[in-house]
Image (cartoon, rainbow, N blue to C red):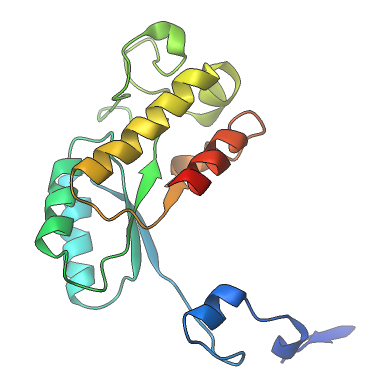
Length: 182
């Protein structure tokens, strides 16, 4: 039981998450999901994921299909496709935040899309995409990333968003639509 000076909360005060029940957990079970994202953004992320997966530490991860080391991440998933611990999603990417290591869209090179900065890569920060990107171009890019992961042999279990970029009123409807579709 958690106590604070003027109130207390008991775990039984909250209804059980129906997904946990479906997975076979009881109302008193506590579940922690350790999630690794940015897999495929660099060689180190792929190697670290492989090591941590082998050690049994991770139960969930998400790959960046627009990044240079994505093919290595996809190869790892294909090599271990029979491993029930592989739970790989797509870390939907519309930003490239580093100064000396960048990536860009896979669906377009058109500056009018709003997906490219002056250097020809995804913008570094979220607001540039959230307020200026063409919504059709955003959806096409996100769909292309999901399709690239599926075509590479990844059994995509979920999608999430790099740097929380898609958690914006203009972009959230696209994210939710793709979540339902895929």
